[in-house]
Image (cartoon, rainbow, N blue to C red; front, side, top):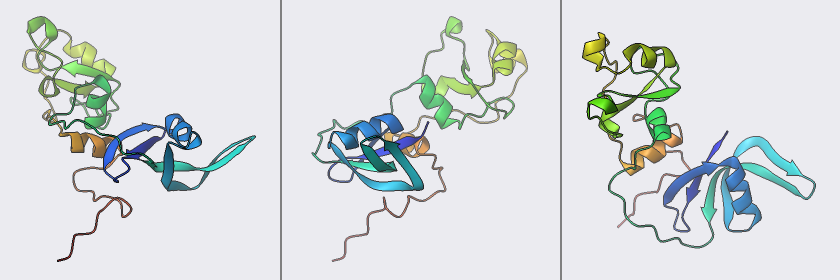
Length: 170
């Protein structure tokens, strides 16, 4: 399902939502479409709008400042781009580097994306005990990193033209 970027009324990125949620916000006139997917449209009996890629809320929403991105299984899969940390194939599960039964928790630095075969092979052991090597080291993304990852943008990628803010001139 497509993800749509939600901007605050002040054009600050807030989060990503599903296409369905984005269309509902636009239909209820709580948001306007700022950028759409070229050539794609949502059509219904009384509706014909472009498929939103970026929407902007009509009213400003005050959001508490977050210094850390909250951990989630989906977040780990997105952070690791759905690639297994042990073999590089498509990942469908999340593996705990230090198993929960050994005191490992649900944290960014203790979880990696894994394919079902490697997750099963590693079982209730550390990678060293299982004779497996991590291809990538887990890291804790910032809230901004989480948003870029959810949009499918990597570290070297630049923000799209419609999102980049021109520098203030003096």
